Amino acid sequence: MAKEITSRTEDYSQWYLDIVKKAGLADNSPVRGCMIIKPNGYALWENMRDALDRMFKDTGHVNVYFPLLIPKSFLSKEAAHVEGFAKECAVVTHYRLKNDPDGHGVIVDPEAKLEEELIIRPTSETIIWDTYRNWINSYRDLPLLYNQWANVMRWEMRTRPFLRTAEFLWQEGHTAHATAEEAIAETRQMLDVYADFAENWMAMPVVKGVKTPNERFAGAEDTYCIEALMQDGKALQAGTSHFLGQNFARAFDVKFLNKDNKEELVWATSWGVSTRLIGGLIMTHSDDDGLVLPPKLAPTQVVIVPIPKPSPEITEAADKISKLLRGMGIRVKVDNDETKRPGFKFAEYEMLGIPVRIGIGARDLAAGKVEVARRDTKEKMSVDTEGVAEYIKNLLDDIQQNLFNRAKAYRESMTTKVDNFDDFQKVLEEKGGFILAHWDGTGETEDKIKELTKATIRCIPLDSVEEDGKCVLTGALSKRRVLFARAY
RNA sequence: AGGGGCGUAGCGCAGUUGGUAGCGCACUUGGUUUGGGACCAAGGGGUCGCAGGUUCGAAUCCUGUCGCCCCUACCA
Image 1: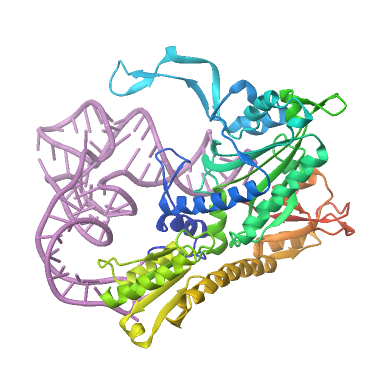
Image 2: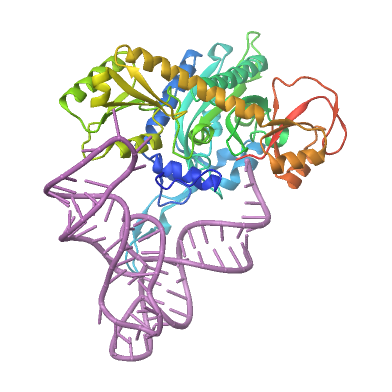
């Protein structure tokens, strides 16, 4: 039946790879760990990018672009930052090739060695703060609310398309503020933007929280995150927003004169989401028949398939409906390809995750109806041609909402409160998902739990209530539950 | 880093005792089809990872080498 998609129960990670491939999202690249994003995958990313970009602009941000290459020396200026990223940096050491004198091909010209080696950005804090030093003199220059859309490179050991790749596309916001309060407010605001995007565009419910010191971004004072739960019970960090304190200002000597004519260090934030979100989108909604896309992000929202093949009457009816839908701002495709049979098309469009399919055949036309199939539930309805556009518009909203509700119900059913370590291990092994448990607040306990169970603290949820309890491992007193899970 | 495995058409694979390259999918052309992944026929496509060696003859045997995958470990 299905075009060789491994089922989720059989092998979840193979299922994931099959979806990526069969839905035309990405291909492997000749370079290990990199991926080639194909039209379907890129169109999805463009829709995500456009929605996020509008949200950034609406909150006062503007876009900039900083270079791919960063002088190696920059990275070492902030101690925690270099510690976190040094192990996965690609380094440019030469600037020229030459013909191999001993045979075919080219070799690196040893005489073209760079005096200062360059790193390919794993993130841009260093080059940006080196630049902000020159851009910021006075409190009147603040805040600086800049974002950039870029690619970055982190030399990862184990990679998977979208979820963890050596090169990935993302946006990184880098803002500068006169006060800590303002920077913290910015950090929280962008976290809210990410949560809003995840839930209302991707239909992917998320938990907002703070990372523990162990899981904090290299160089941050506080890292906030949104955490989502995938269908296999593993957690995915879907976005992060960092309060950087004055760490980068200190490292790069970025000071401003305040109203009292006194020099102060600037306060910073950075925040980012990446093509990893596409991985999250796949693993939140898709099924054994292929991709399932939320209507708001789907590159094509409605496909019209003539059955059994286009005839003048059917083509006319299809065009009429597609025009009406387009007039309502809906993205429609009419498939008049006569070389493929309807059954093939049905399966194909399900694979591609198109939210709504309209089938029009002679039988439907005679009855004044069309067949409408929704991808999320696979239901088929016979709908009056009269008013079908309005029906589809509502249906798309309904699908968007249903996907969110379904994912949220799943997450709730997979979030377990646990009060002792036996239960903790048992739930993790037998059920998976999020575990809410007490923790004594130490990095040692966190490490020990990770060592024993492979689960990490995903975050301390922002909405957690104060509650007396005992650490699930050590029994020490704890004031609130934190969120554990095995994670991607 | 330790252990195991694999390199043959775009993809997935077969190839026995060494005898000169094959299957399925995909692709091209023509025809019949078309309400849930059509069928028939005819085609195109190869430096058998690479380099040596043994041999009259190597995808096959030997040596070396390169690349990739899996498990364990490591990392986020």
